[in-house]
Image (tube, rainbow, N blue to C red; front, side, top):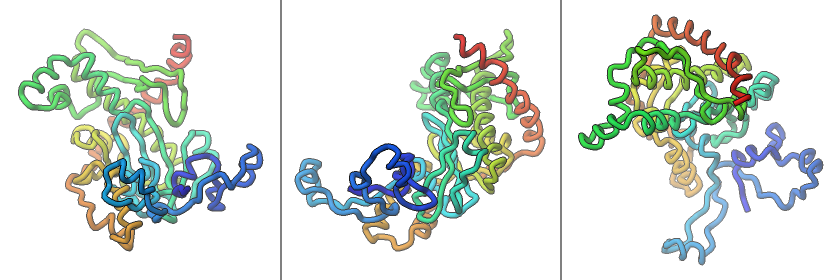
Length: 335
């Protein structure tokens, strides 16, 4: 049985600095290391599938089995995080940011922020990971609960309900503040009892205001993690957006304006599939150099720069957002 270094280092049984299963942890838990998988770099041919299993799955011959990696790390590889200082943000059901590191950053700041640091699928590199449980799921909840008209129009006209919901949204901050803890909070607080909150509602509030505020709240939460990484000494030169949320120019521009960094979007936003495919190609001998294989097929067709005036306005709004969780957390815990 084999496991990639990437996935082994997600088990909390692996010594990142030593590059092996941690004898200290295994001894403390009474675990026999011989019962654990052989750890190999991502993209290593581990053997072939058992013939009976291959036949039952419809393969004409047993396929090669190659070590892969954590889905988010595969996405980071697929969008070109092959050197330190680059970051990816994957917006799907949840929203996850991965930052590539030359060495494992294991300091007090990242520890207290509950950030995962583990081996990258790119051998020799590491990644730090942030997490927001809500992500695109929160926008889907809003669409399904409050936007039946837009869904009907999109269905009859062949359009996109999200485009209709956000049509006419101002590029400036929404009049609302939303705490996007609809499934508890992820990093840095990991407060499973936290809940969502909406502040600023009036009779003048529109569905577009709410939709825009949801995107802002999610991106403010992303900035909270972004700033934490910076405080922990992690450099981020550029952000690369992948996943379903990367299809929205409005949302990606919002990330650039709130975070204050350039954001690039690849032509293929399903980067995790591509990253895993390249690892399989390296293991099968189709490619000889992992980084070159990724870069050769990677094309960015959209680039978003932070707008200076909007970045300043969002800085002011972000300062208010930072007060929101402490202001409502005690009450949320009583609900």
